[in-house]
Each structure stands twice: as structure tokens, then as C-alpha cells.
Length: 636
Image (cartoon, rainbow, N blue to C red; front, side, top):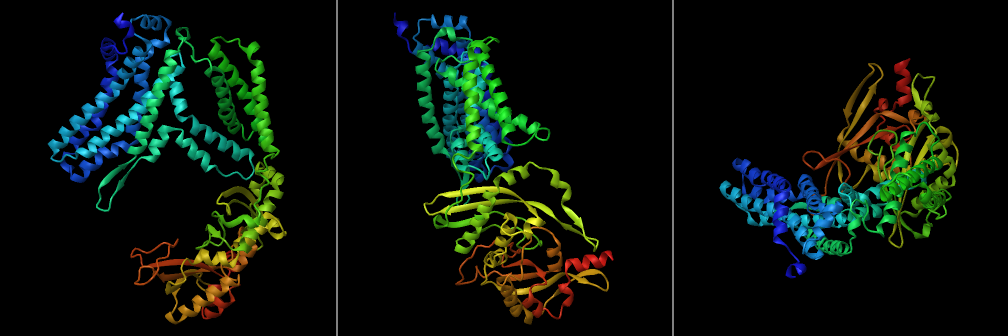
């Protein structure tokens, strides 16, 4: 019969449109409100710039992208809903239409539910823009093309998901989970690694790969508006959505292949494809172990011993739960233990082996310290230090062999104390021992923590990153070879301190002021501008003292040494930025420029060890009263 070879059926298409009109009707209403109605609502402010920008801005709007994403699954659920009931599946496949014809008719029906409302919104958007007095056809047409391409990919992906399941409620769950699964798994793995892998900071390559494999997130992050020098808006992302549309066509072809081989008796099954069933069970169990296990670990964090083995216990428990729950879903019964326990044992053995390999550091990740010959440069992230001035928190990068050597020594000292530092990280007893009251009546700090972030650029172009949380205790600072002592020595290298304070030594010093200047007689704090004839010798003295290690010294603790050496008075140095002058070479600066962008100010706390600066400012003896002296006097 001729109908037996039909590859498309208009009657079925019309019935789909009639049965599921609320889906395409609501989608039409949504785009009517977002495009033509919104354009008319902006009639009073409808300028040529807005006429060009508004349709393009919709393509980068999260709500608009989510609208297409959500309606794609609704359309797929509607037109392929007959597959999830044995009676309706049997009835539809008894029609004189080939399977290819059923698939193509229903596929195009759902796609039409997306495309036709968008075309209608486009046409009415042109009319609304014309009524406003300005039409930018290219922007509206770009919107139509981009949103159609996005819809094609999301809908094809939803249809492919529909072929993997025989249960209507499982379809949206599968669609949402698979859309975000790579990114969620990457986040869970990073969180797990931070808990059990000593020194782990992040895996940017894993995050980037996960974003690529999560199209919804990738489209949201990688599409944007750019503006030319004359302020013309352009949509960046058309090539990306076109690539996803091509992928969508491939997914539609895979969906057709699965549909042709689909067994009708799988209606009602959570997973309808045989080879996907073990993958589903392993995936559910693994995700349950990662997600639920870590969730319960965080809930009972303060009640149970912290560390790798507690995490492993939770992962094993919830991995087993996930395994048997997946078996119940697949077999559609509750008593599944007898036939499934062997696979569960294999899963738990794999989880245990993986965590043990990490804890025992079989790959050598936690012990790794690069060889100095391979290191091109080293960087360190911000570390809060005292006193509070320009250099209190600064990140640096250096290729100096001496600084690289010191950094590697610090790194090695941290690695050598791995077990001690991991045990300390789970100990809260130190929290009440941070401050100590001195005889002078003021507090000094005896304990704090810092986060050490190291990044090595190696000779082969690779980057090695590590992150450690270190305790800083007074006894550690006083002992040689401890991470705290090595860190304090490293951050006090004169070359690093000079960079922390001064980005561009060619800029001219135009003003200097003593602030927080303590007057012992009145007990008040004032400020005093220094005369111009002191500026040049003062700058020379400041640089000389920094290079000798006598000024700008950083302290990891607000301890007695810091209180005795650091003054209350700060020296504010104002420089004129020369980068914009004729013939000057622009130099990037981390300092905050003034409103006119020609001057900037740095703050430097005076220190009693700064002998050269002290000599230049000999007429201002009150500027060199230490914090310990002033605090003792004020409490005396």
C-alpha cells in the first residue's frame, strides 16, 4: 500500500498542533511579550541605537535562553508521549506509516512548535519597530536565526533523550541531568579533590572541558554583545550556535536510528535501550556517591572525624544506596538485592581503590615539587600581612633564581609536613588561642592562618599550581626551616617589597605627608605635609631602606616584634603619573589613580629600623613612636 511507505503524514501533524496547542500557544505569547510588545513599550525612547541593540540583547539574556531550553523539552515530551504507554505505542505503530515517517512527522511537529512562534514574533517585531519609527532588519533577523539554531539543538537533544527512556517523567529528568552533568561532576570532583588531595587548588582544564560539554552553560557564557568604536552593537556567538545546530542535526539522526530499533514493549521502562541500562546504573551510583556522600559529610562535618576516611565511608554508603535504587528503577520492583549485590561490591571496591590511591599518593601529586632547572618563573597569590599599608596584600611574579630557590624550599618544607598540616586542618582547638595580653595592656597575635597559592611556569610551557592552608604560630616563626619562617623570609625579599610599593620608579614624587602623627602632649592624631626640599632625599632614603630590608618589612602576625618596630605614623607619597606625557612609555600600575588620572598615592608605614628615612625626618621625632609605645602610654 502507498501509505505503508509514507515518510510524512500531514494529518498527524495537524492533530499534534490541535492536541498540544497550549504548548506552542504559550511559547508564542512569551515571545510576543519579549519582542513586539516590549518594542512598542519603548516607543518614547526608541532610538537607532536601541533598535539595533535590543533584539541582540535578547540573545544574551539568560531568561531568553532558558525559555528556548525549557520549551524544547516540553515539545519533545508532547509529540513523543505516545512512546511511554504500551497501548498508545501499539496504536501509533499500527498506522500505515513507516517508523521513519512517524519519527519525522513528530520531530517536525515539535520543531514547528518552536520555529513558527519565533517567525511570527519576528514579523510582528518588524511591524512594532516600524511603528516606533526605526527598523534595524539585521538585528531582528540575527535574533531569529540565532534563536532558531538554539532551538534546533536543544530540541534535537531532547528528542534523543526521549529515545533513551520509556517513561514520561524520566524524560525531563534525563534531559536536565545530561545537560548539566559534565559541569556538576567537575564541581563535585574538584570539591572532593580539595578535601582529600593535599595542595590541590583547582583544575581549570576540567572546568573548561565541562563547560564545553554542557551546552546550556557554554552558550550562556560564550555569547555576548560587543560594541565597535562608534558604539554599534554586534552579537558574538552566531558561529557557536550554528555549530551546535549542526550537532543537533547529528543528534536527530542518532535519535532516528534508536527509534527504528526501539522495542515497543519497553514502554514504561526508565531506560529503554539495553546497552544504556548498565551505564545508567553505574552512573546513578557514582553520582550518588559523589554528590550525596559529600553532602552528608558536610552536614556531619563537626560531629564526626574529618578527613579522607570519613568521606570514603559516606561515599561507600551512598554509592550502595544509589546502586540499588537504580536497580529498582530498572527492574521496576523493590527486591533487587539478590541479583545486584555483586555489582555493588565491584562499585564499592573501585571507589575504595580510587580514594586509597589518592590518600597514599600513588600518582605522586601531593609530593611533587618542581626542579629549579625546569622553573621559568614563580607566582604567589595575595597573603594578608602587617602593617596595613600599600604592601599589606600583594601578589607577585618573579624569575629571579634566588626567589625561585626560596619558593621551592618553602614548597618542599610544606610537602615534608603533609601529615602534620592535614591533621592540623581538622583541629579546631587553636581558635581560642589567637591573642595574648601583654604587660603593656595591649593584645598581640599568637596565631593565624594563611592560604599559600603557588604557580610555577615550567620550561615546557606548562603551569603547575598548588594551594595550601598554613598555620602561622609564634613558635613556628622563631624556628628555622618551618613553613611559617620560610614564608616570612620570602615575602621580605627586598626585590619583592620594592615591587609591592612602587610600580614605576620613573614617576615623579610631588608630595609627601605624614598621617596619623601622634602628639604625646595632647594624645591626638594629626597630619603634616613635608616641605618640597625633603622630597628627593626622602625618596632616596625610602628606596635605600627597602633595598636593605629596613623598611616595608612584612609580618605574618601582629606580634610583639611588629608592635615594637612599626610606627603609628604612615608616610603618604603622591606621584605624578608620567606614562601619558609625550615620549613616555606607558607603564601599567596597580595603584589607584586620582580622579584626573595624573597622580596617585601610596601609603607606607614608618618603621624604627628605617635608619635612612629616620635621618631625613629627624625634625619629626614623633613620627617614629612605635605602636607598642603609644598603646602602652594610652593605657597607662
